[in-house]
Length: 204
Image (cartoon, rainbow, N blue to C red; front, side):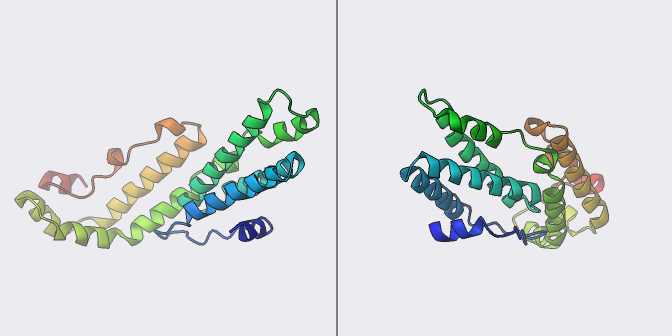
């Protein structure tokens, strides 16, 4: 795992999960990252600082170029872990002054491309459009009330539903671009899915 993680640092990003309901092996990647940093600091502060600098630059590239939400989230978590290590170094009373400039540069604020959710939100929209019919069939197969059963057999306006998906994702990455990460739009405010009653059907 350590060898493959070190090799990954030298490769370009290929986020090939766009529009698909897949996720990378996050737990294994996180384990390899922690092992990589721990082994570096076990060899000395110089090696440890070199490794965390390399790691943070690699993950910032991933964060900037991610096209799917799972990869974007993984990159953000990896950066948070790196920042926690850097913070631990900075609060040490005997920290070597030669590292301060490098450490300060590592924790610079994220830029607009690193914060943007436009591509991940588009990927979620494409995935939602692909799985629309399957989710509808699964919902029909579950135990329903009489009103819900009536609503489920009516011809749902699929294009309008997909437009509401688009509205939701547009609002989400607009909120993220404006820095409102703790107040992202609610799914339920844009999309009534599945239709529970005849009223839901007509409102959808």
